[in-house]
Length: 325
Ligand code: NDP
Ligand code: GDR
Image (cartoon, rainbow, N blue to C red; front, side, top):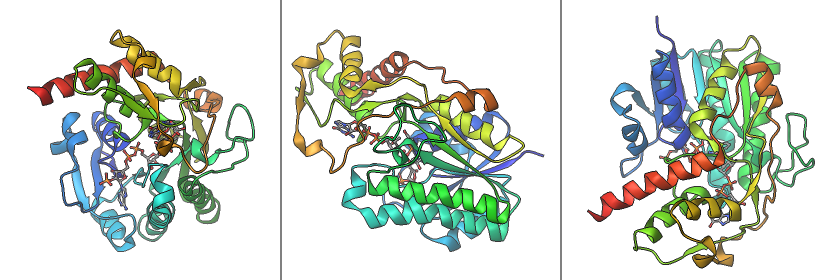
C-alpha cells in the first residue's frame, strides 16, 4: 500500500519539487488547491507531475475545506507549505499574511487533531524568524527576533507546531529553512528577479535592473535539495525542529556578480539602486548552522550557489528566447 501525502502550497516552488520527490518515492500525492481566477499549475507542468497528483479544492483560511481534504486524502503525512510567503508584501497585507501564514497552520493542526491525529505534520518554518539575528550563526537554539509581519506569523505557526506536539502528541516537525531557490522561484524574489533580468539584458530586451538593499546577506540553497530534508524529518522516530541551510552566506551584490559573470557581463554596468525596494525593517544577515540536520537526518546541501545561480540564468535564457520566438 502506498503512503498518502497531502501538500498545502503544492502549486508553489517547494510544493512542486516535493510533489515530484514524493511521487518518485511511490507516494500517492494530494494537494490543497485554493481557488484562483487564472491557472497556477505551471510549476507542476514544468516538472511533469500535474497529471500524477490529485488536487483538492481548499484554502488554508477555511478550516472546513481542510477537514474535507483530510477526509478525502486519509494522509500519512501532511506538509504545510502554503503561505503568503513574500516578505515585502507582508507589510502591505499584514492581516492576510497572519491569516494564511499564521492561522492557516493552526487550522491544519487543529483539523489533523480532529480527523487524523496519527498523521505526521511538517511545518514550513523559516530563517526569517531569526530576523534581527541574536547570534552570528543561527541554529535551533538561537533566540528569535522576527522583523516582518511574515516572520511574526511564521513564529506563531512554529510555536503552535511545538505546542500541538507537546499537548496532543501530534507528530509535528518544524523545518527552519534558510532561503532556497530554483528556476521555479517566483519572479518577485531577488535571485529570480536577477536571473530573469540577466537573461533579458543579455538578449537585448531589458536595459537595467533596479534593486533595493544589495548589502543584505543570505544563506541560499537549492529547493530541490531542501524538500528531501522535509521528508527526512517525518521519517524519524521522534518529531523535532531542524535548521536546514548551506552554512555559507553571500551578499545580494555578490549573487548578482555570479549571475552577470555567467553571461560575460559586468553587474556594475546594469544594477541601479531604487529605494522603493527597501523594506520598513530589514533582515541584514542570515547564516545557518545545519549541523543537527547533517548529523540526525544525514542531510547535506548538494548544490553550490554558483551551480544554483547559473542553473537559474540558463533556465531564464531559455524562457526568454522562447518568448521572443
Ligand atoms: P511559494 O510562495 O512559491 O508558494 C506558496 C504556496 O502557498 C502557493 O502554492 C500558494 O498558492 C499557496 N497559498 C497561498 N495562500 C494560500 C491559502 N490561503 N490557502 C492555500 N494555499 C495558499 O513559496 P515556496 O514554495 O518558496 O515556500 C514554501 C513554504 O516554505 C512557504 O510557507 C514559505 O513561507 C516557506 N519558506 C520558504 C523559503 C524559501 O526560501 N523558499 C524558506 C523558508 C520557508 P498561490 O500561488 O495560488 O497563491
Ligand atoms: P527573503 O527573500 O525576504 O529573504 O524571503 P527575497 O529574495 O525577497 O529578499 C532577499 C534579500 O534581498 C534584498 N533585496 C531585494 N529583494 C527583493 N525581493 N527584490 C529586490 O529588488 C531586492 N533588492 C534587495 C531584500 O531586501 C532581502 O534582504 C525569502 C522568502 O522565500 C520567505 O518566504 C522565506 O521565509 C525566506 O526567504 C527565508
